[in-house]
Length: 199
Image (cartoon, rainbow, N blue to C red; front, side, top):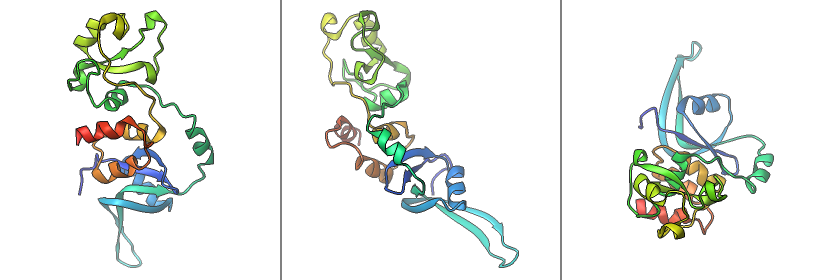
């Protein structure tokens, strides 16, 4: 069994990843009959009250991945145009906590968001113009482009798909959840290579 902070991956009935939820929300979905099926490892066995009629205690078993009923046609259509919100934790995860200038791996506290084309030169605060940089490299680059600063960019920034963003938002993603999410990444996703480097 896992600690109560372990997240459950919720999908729609077709298996498309939707979000991470806590065990309380997962138990609620089971109780309401919204879970179509479950896969992955058993995370929790939650015991309820004792039935006065049967004398049996209720038990809900929560797996690491649960598929829920519901109509998600609008979400499926929007997913093709989906641009996830840009935030530093997801950005640092996208770039595997590597400074994309010096190539070293750093903790969250020592990283920063760098604009490849600086805002002062007309650059935008978008996924395709930002990379993870250590504070030293970011300070050295300052308000210049990598070329102007004489620095080499180690990877091309990209906008994550919906499934990639779900992965990037996860905390302590389990192996079965990772395998499930990887199957939903585009074949050409740079995350495939980056995740191999982490494992």
